[in-house]
Image 1 (cartoon, rainbow, N blue to C red):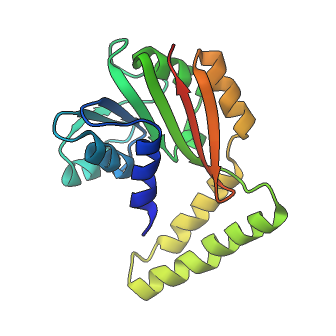
Image 2 (cartoon, rainbow, N blue to C red):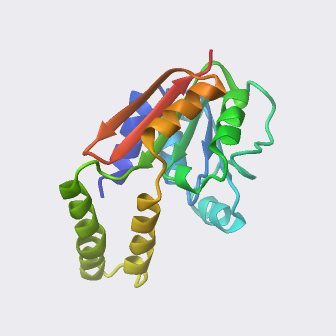
Length: 201
């Protein structure tokens, strides 16, 4: 239940403010989009982008914002329109991060920020064992106790597999710099939650 607070806190800490124009890439069902809308308020503009029409349909059931069906590597927006670009836990599904980051830079205004939230493999063996236990045992148990959807165990097993296939953090920061971002950073929380950030010159 801490996810909503965490997503909002990350966006706030990285500079998302009232009235900004935001593009949430790989928005899915809108978890990060919702946090962005909370922070930008009625004077802001939030656009949710995702390649899946089904995901965007679910998002529209909950949120009233602009949506675009497209891939991160080909964003159908003009240059320099966005103040803040977010992406939540989807980088490991992007086919070409160099193409995606070039698009992120293009649509951002000068001084605009990118914030990519991602989960990475814990560095220590103990951390990896703890994560595997959490995904394989704790989450399914809590889901059964709370009466949540029956496919939770299968879904989290898939989630664990994608974490194992996550991109190395140094590759992500190097790709952001290659794209032209400045002030590139990577904040690590609890040994596995990462926030990759950068600023368009």
